[in-house]
Image 1 (cartoon, rainbow, N blue to C red):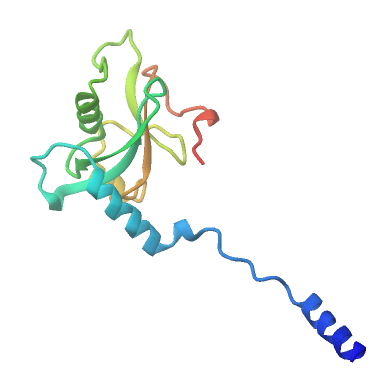
Image 2 (image 1 turned 120 degrees about the vertical axis):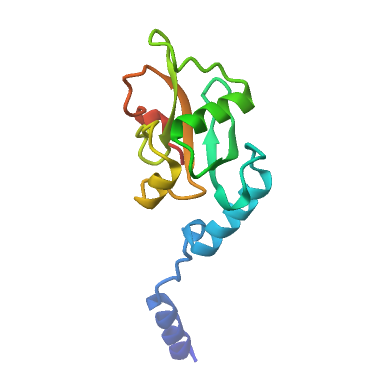
Length: 154
């Protein structure tokens, strides 16, 4: 009997523990569920037809410290999307003044500025963005092209 116990212990010891996939949030189904939840809570211009809407989670400037889902028309430029969020949230938008910091949208994963004259449809088509992605809205000097690493989100 002790020999059998020893063999069982050896077999159990030689087995590698099964590692659960911790990246479950990255599965296609999880992303679809996240997008569905985002669509229920998102704010935006009510006049945009459902078929034209694209959804993103936008982190407001640091002094406001919140993240909210918004939808935009895929035909809109990024600049118009910035104006829309600024209007909804009543943020100061001095993008027409060269002597002040401008509101800009950044890709949260790359921390790169999104071009204000590009349409959301074009950015989605060339895979620069994907629906449901996190974006960061921040006041920066008009010459800024990327946010510092301290803005990286988990």
